[in-house]
Length: 111
Length: 113
Image 1: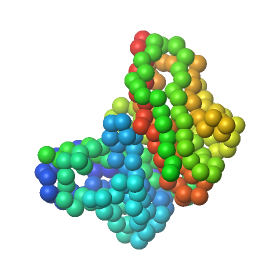
Image 2: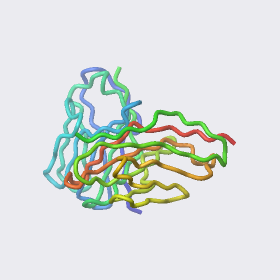
Image 3: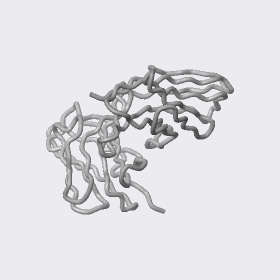
C-alpha cells in the first residue's frame, strides 16, 4: 500500500548540531509539506514543495532548509539545532489541491 | 492574513454526550474549510471538509456547516464515544494559495465511559 513515512520517529540532539529529518512518500504526490506542532500553536508550516527542484518558505522557516531532488523525498535539515526547535515535526503530501496525507511524526528534542 | 481560532481544551465529556467544538476563521476570498483529527501517537487524518458557503461536511457521525455570515465552521457530534478521544484541528485553505493549510491551535477531546 502507498504510504508516507518519517524517520527517525524520535531524536535527541545537542544545541548547534546539524539534524536531518527524512520524509518519504510512495503516492507519487507532487506536493509535500513540513509542519511543526507545538502546544497552543497547532501546526505551523515550515517549508513546502510543489515538485522536483521546487522549494518554498512557510510561516516559520528560519533555521530550517529543504531540498527536493526527486518526487518521493523531502528531507528537512536543521542547520544548527536550537532548543526552540524542540517540537514534533510532521510531513504531509498531496496531489494537486486534494487532501493532504500526514506522516506519523518525528519527536525532536534539542538539549 | 489568514487565521483560525478554536476553543481551548481540553473538552471532557461523558460517553453519549453532545459535542460542539467551535471554530472561527479570518481569510480573504472564499476559503475551503477542514476538520482534521489526531489520535494519540499518530499523524493527522482528514475528518471532513466543506468548500463553499452553506456546505455541510460529514463523516463518522461528525458534522460541520460552512457559515460565511459568521465565519464559522463548528464541529458537532450527537453522541460521542470513548474512541472519539483525540485532538481536533480546524483548518482553512485559501482558494488561490495552492494547497497550503492554516491550522487552528487544536482542541483535545476526552470522552469518559
